[in-house]
Length: 221
Image 1 (cartoon, rainbow, N blue to C red):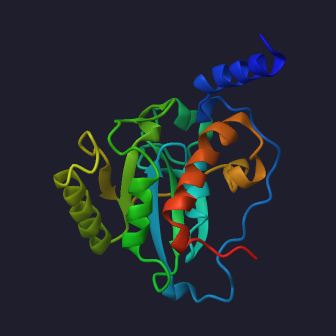
Image 2 (cartoon, rainbow, N blue to C red):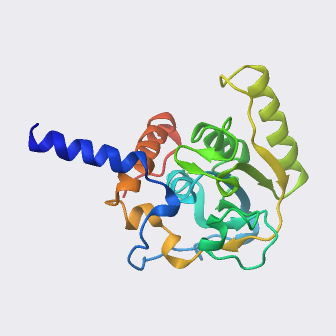
């Protein structure tokens, strides 16, 4: 067997067992800027989604024009101030989520919902690929009644249209406390893109997303 074939096989083997929780703790990150001072925070809105590993969710939503900031964290659980290790046990009840601050004049909540449902598999209960557990559940935490009604409406429409081979299992629940994740989780893909999980899991999702939403992406400088 040729050396490059052996290397490819080993990389594929490693990927088969790769999961968000099993990745080594990376170097300290340079966090992305939060809300720009040039924007009036009163005109901005917030959305919170869980769609598997928050590294993937963050990397996808950072691409959208109108998204001001994306913070990875935990929500929906029963333990105050949980750590990543605690959440990964599945015993805290929290989901890995991203809290997205956006400008509704540029990108609508409906646009964000579309990005949410198309960027992961909402039909697999408590699982995205090799990431398994309630912390990886598909969930929408709504911040107001308008978000709730729109999320429930679109979920029903997608199921009625058989948009997926199986029924959507996405949880739709009121937003509770959001606990921001440890610093090294913030801006993860941009800071650690060379890691195997980023190369084999996050990068393909980002590239697929960029093709589907090419007209709604941030313009590169």
